Length: 451
Ligand code: ARG
Image (cartoon, rainbow, N blue to C red; front, side, top):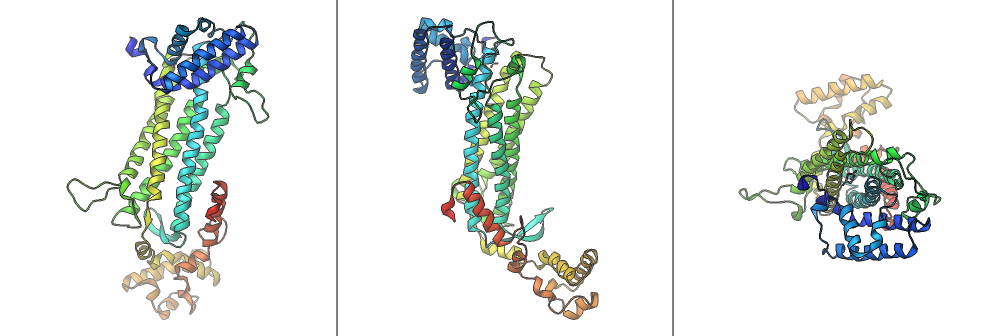
C-alpha cells in the first residue's frame, strides 16, 4: 500500500511551488498573530535550507511519507519546532490546489515562450520563402498556387492562437485557493487576501484573486483539463505541421531538405534520410491527447469534494507539459535547419492546371457568370486532356470554339507571379499581403530587426 499510494515519485517536482505556498501561508499566520514573527522566521530559515538541499539534488524523498507535502513538512519539523504550527488553518487539499496553480502559472509561461520560439523559426523560414511558389493542396491534390511563406504562416496563425489560449489560461489559473481548508474553510481568523497577494494571485490592478467557494476550490480540476486541452490542440497543430513537412521532405515532393541532426539514416538502406524528429512529434502528439482523455475520465463522476482519485491528476498534466515542450523545441530546431528546394517547388507549381480557376475568373471579367465559366474551363481542360497537351497549348480556335468569350489574351492567366500578385486582399497569398503578415508577426514577437 505504501508503494501503491505514494505520489512523491512524481509530485516532488512541485517542491519549490509548495515551499513558496508555505512561506506565504506562514507570513499570513504571523500577520494575523496565529504564529509569532520568530516562528515565521524559523520556518522560512528551515525552508531555505531544505530548498538548497533540493536544488543541490541532496534531498532524500521518502515514499513512506507519501507525497511532496508530507516530505517537506517532515523535513521542516526535523529542523525547527515551529514547523508544527505551519499547518494551522490549512489542509493538504487547499495546499495541493495552490501548488498546482503556481505550477500552472509557470508552465503556461514556459509553453508561451516555447511557442514563440516555434513562431520565430517559422517566421524566419517564411521570410526566406516568399518568392518560392508551391502548389496549395486540397484533398492532397494540387489545387492553386501559394507561396511557401503563406503556407508556413498558416501555422504561425495556429500557434499564435495556442499562445493566446495559454495566456488566457494563465489568468484563469491565477486564483488563490488557500484558506479553503479541507473543504469548509477554517474557524481561525486568517487573512486570505494577504496570502493571495504574497503569492502574486492578483489582478492587473493588484487586487487579490481568491477562489469564491471552498468546495469548488478543493474539488475542481478545470484548469488541469483546460491545460491538457490547450496542449492537445497545440499537439494537433504540431502533428499537422509534422505531417506536412514529412510529405515535403519525401522524394515525391522534394520541397525541402531536412537538417541531418534531426533525421536518421537506415541501418540497411544507405540512401535513406528519415524524418524522425517530425515522425516523433506526430507520434508524441498522441500522448498529449491521451493525457487529456485520462483527466476527463478521472474527474467525471467524482462526488464533491476531494477524493484520492485526484492524486492521479498530476502524471497526465506533467506528461502533457513535458511532451509538448520537447515537441515545440524539436520543431524549432528542425525548422531552423530546413532548406527549401526552389527547383523542385518550381517544377511542382509549373502545372498549368493550378491556374484553371484563374482562367474561370478571367471569363467572369469578360461577363460570364461564374457557374458557366467553371463549366467552360472544365470543357477546355477536358479537351486538353483528350489532345494530351497542356491547357495553355490549346489553340485560340480550340477555346473560342468552346465559347466566343475566350479573348485573344486568354493565356495571360498562366503566369504564377501574376496569379499571386492578383491576390492582394486581406488574408490572401499575394506577396505584399504575405510580407505585411511577416512584418506584423515580427513586430508582435519583438523581432523587428527582421524588417
Ligand atoms: N498527494 C495528495 C494529492 O495529490 C495530496 C492531497 C491529500 N489529501 C488527502 N485528503 N488525502 O491528491
